Length: 276
Image (tube, rainbow, N blue to C red):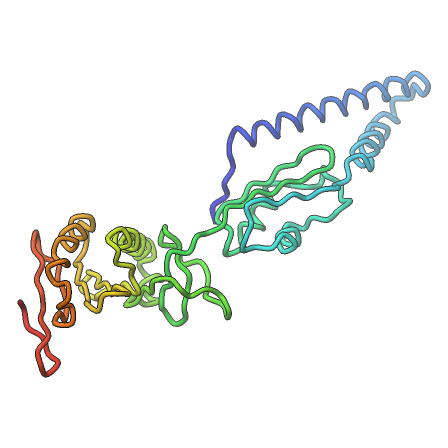
């Protein structure tokens, strides 16, 4: 989980916190000096300072009375509050933004999180949630984001109207996690490119040879894309498809894995196919 902290925001909140601490310690110093005038026994100084500090920092003035959560749609506010360990009335000095960011960051839908204290009574949690780009089929169905990160299994009742990614195995993510993630991320670019060509995808199939085969939702033809040069291949496909309008049922597949050409595979009457 990435911990997202804007340096300027972090510095601003630390600066404000520091100024408040200076004011509190200044008040403590005044009280301390006043007390020493009345009780000039130095052996009580340490105990007195500790007592005054605890009295000021623990004052009800610093009780949390508002917990503000922004940017969360898939994750409920009460769930985030529970994960953060926050509660109304707790002392705001005991709220540790870094610890809360690590806790909340463990939620599968949370991509980035920023926590800040707004003295004297408010805690703000800003979330950036993950975006689903596709569903990868392994032993179960899992959501995958545009960066190729498989972050959550698809639960009952959750949305499934995303392109399927098939042909990969759990072992691919265990033994070659980084390279597999990069392959998934690169292949996911095709979803947007094909959508721009008015060919929404139902499936991206990863072949053992390293290429991918695309299955458009509204076009009954397998598109063998090979690997790489997606923009050029989609442009060539966009030029070729109009010539097959009305004869799509004759096509078994279009192969774009060759350089600067598109190979059409025609269906045979008995169900086979041949190159055209």
